[in-house]
Image (cartoon, rainbow, N blue to C red; front, side, top):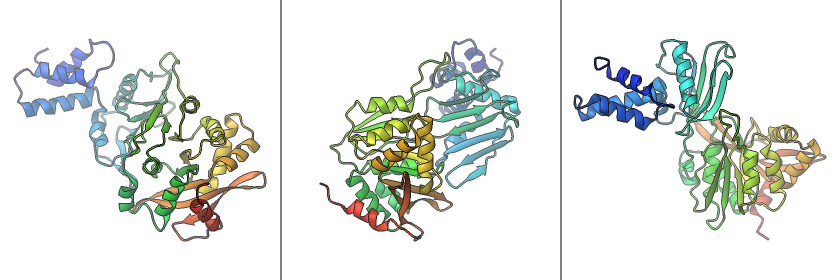
Length: 380
């Protein structure tokens, strides 16, 4: 075996080891197989190449390390795309064939104990480094193996840093500061990649240091600059189908942990029922993010999620009207991510509606006066 290339020797030795290869194991084997034949720089380069190939994301690993990359998408062996915040762009990376894409997807899933084969042709799971993996195999995917990697970088910019990027047009920053100071419940909405989590994290950094934040997330993305943060993380089931921890489970546990502010990283399922209940039982200042194209669509999104969680339509609208105060909508464009609208949540007959109270484009704001009164009202 000594005549084989270094990578082949390392691969052959790893094949005899139980379980998926770890980065540390690959690095140790490279050092051992290289012996004293390579200089320090060559060894480091060989270690990186071997780790990328055998324990990392293979040819996609350099793309994941690029500054600003949020998504790497594989639609086929010769169709690799990435997103650096300004839309999708074609990458120069190529795979030899679809089998190579499939092998990479199967190996990545195996690193967290998940199956990906003909019996379980898709997987959606967080990898050890925090990257989110979604993969679909043929024939469910008609164009070959599809692979999606979402780079979940901790959202760390504070409000000042975001303001420097032009994220707060007009008086939006002042209104948002008043929103946090007044302990009003709110949702940050927008499309995928619009910057919802980044904005929410920055806003949580404004919370009084004496308050206790309890965060409920599927993956650790929020990183508010605050001294008292408790983080609860969900997890998928293991290969036996056991061990699932949902966001709804986390919200229920969070309510027993004396939160001053209950935060749900992304409201997208049955947890909406427990969040709405919490906002109506004395947990002021609760917040979260929600996918929505426009603030006016938020009531319909909440209704769909709430009904699926076992609430009737009237209960969803009643609790939303009583518990939620404001919707903060963010938009992404070629020039960056900006706050686009602040909407006021109010009851209209038997339903709840979101009316514009402030808009970046200067459009009509029928709730402007009511939003101003809410955010400038003195604490009782």
